[in-house]
Length: 169
Image 1 (tube, rainbow, N blue to C red):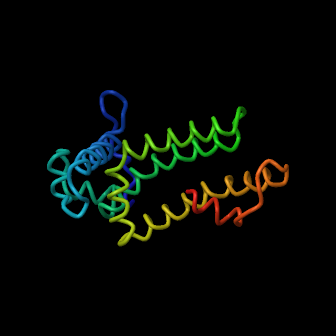
Image 2 (image 1 turned 90 degrees about the vertical axis):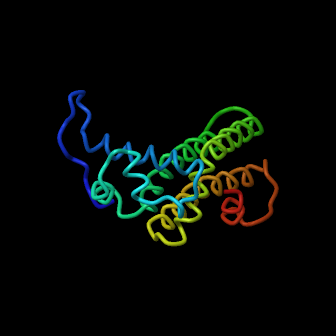
Image 3 (image 1 turned 30 degrees about the vertical axis):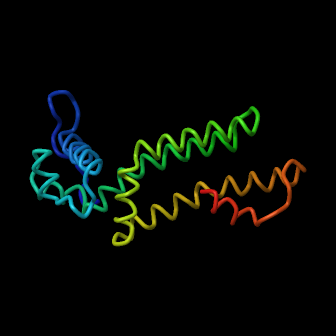
């Protein structure tokens, strides 16, 4: 992002810049539900959000950069689910079922962001990096868990744990 969003405070104590940035993100999220990223213009977003075009570029260097911000919150939820799978108590089957259900619900709820991600990552290096880093971050603890389960004799030997975890992600 190219700006810092530190403009003045509003009457309710919320920084005005934060409100404008959030309005742009909310509008992008809304439009992505019905329209492909390539078919949304910055003017569409700024007009609907009641914000100037230059304000958009203060917060984001491109639509892909804005999608990156939307994706980061989704990845935070995925990381929490992953942590629950690997580090929670209880039966493994139950943990897997709960984790997969949470992730599937999150993906269905945010399918429009994932569609935009697939478009944005082809042209936006920071998005591609965020996606790749997110996948690696999720795969690492799963690979370690596979190793520990194999070492304890609770899981069969098989494919390389890193490759298996990456494929699962």
